[in-house]
Length: 222
Length: 320
Image (cartoon, rainbow over all chains, first blue to last red; front, side, top):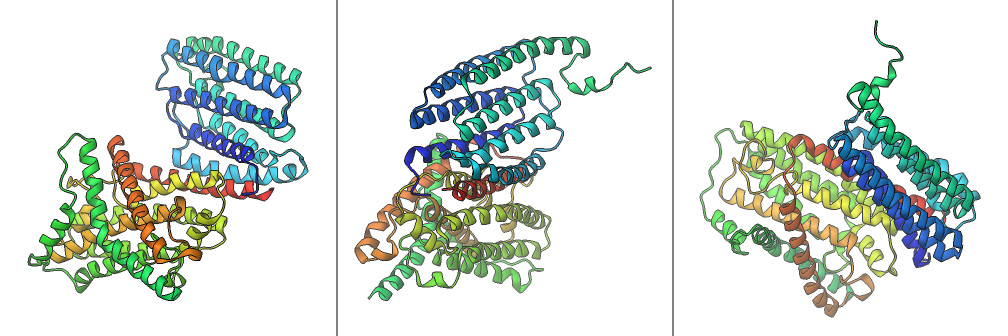
């Protein structure tokens, strides 16, 4: 491992930190801190993309990093903070399973994801291929974050974190998606966020809370 | 000649550990007082307390069994043994072939069992309560500590602490995310195992929260002195395990274990201990004590970090 070049070592460290952040989001109880963690995750993704762009000399990765910075580090967290302020849901987050249980479950998921990614990594030819396992793990952990939360806000944060994981996976498996796909995904996420923002208000107006539990009953009780 | 030097290192290390451990505790207490804007107690206070206790007459509870009297010696003895296999100055230690890091964890567990048994022996409510809490913290902290050691073993392909330390100190510098994770896990375990603030407060006698102090309530005089000394030695040992795993630079490595290297390693160890003391005092000042029932969560985090370190290590090693 010591024969790895130094920039790859930094990339590995960033990948590990990325995974750690996914765990921090899993354990975090407060929604404000959750959004900050999401912004930090975006910043890590941006740094990793920049480093990879510098290493491989692919210019489209620079644009991708810029897009990540603008969208995931600045705009979306700002939007989420604004929504939290306007909805007044600072303390809003209860988990279905306790933290210790969630974390142990998360560990199992990481083991599963690493096992899953091993054959893919063996086929890939990029220098960052051992980060694929981490990307898969982050996607699954974000999924778990969404499953264990009940409130709409935390679920959206989980969704965005999953998207971060997907970008990271694409980056480490094939040095990023084609520019047009990346732009399309970014636009999708942006629109989804704006629509969900409106949706939050509608849900709250209907049920007086952001608890998605209420959406499960299909018709009103007789 | 080299055998002589390694025996010299061994003796020097054990003696230094026994002698310096109370000083380290005193230094942490002093830093903590400074950080909290209090007038600091003397750095020699632990020595004075031990000296005073040794000159008092021991009082034993009527219901105390021989185990109660034997326990302080057993605890102190196992801490001294542990100090003998931790490379704090040189990595070529004759004792290290007798026990590896897993046995070291076992030694620490032996001490814990004796403390807990002695606390339950007299039959007071506090002793039992403290013993139970101690065992709860212990059984959660031990797997985390073992995981921390396994990560370092994987990196250096040995389970003997001096060999691990030697391998990590001599190889070229590289970034190890797995070691960074385990370092954080180790700090959490150190705090929990040594009754430091997020888990237990060493300076309190409030019955609802104390763990370590509750177990020592029945001890007096020389027994108490030995128990206090053993606690200081345990903290010192943990600090030295941390240095051996995560900041191994500066120890006299096996190839170059000369008297000169030993002399150089002494001030380096002192500097590391001073820095660790400041760090511990800082952690204890900025964090609030957890409820006892939050301690499992705290230690689960430590375990999670250590296992994550292990997994990341396996993953990033798998494809060079």
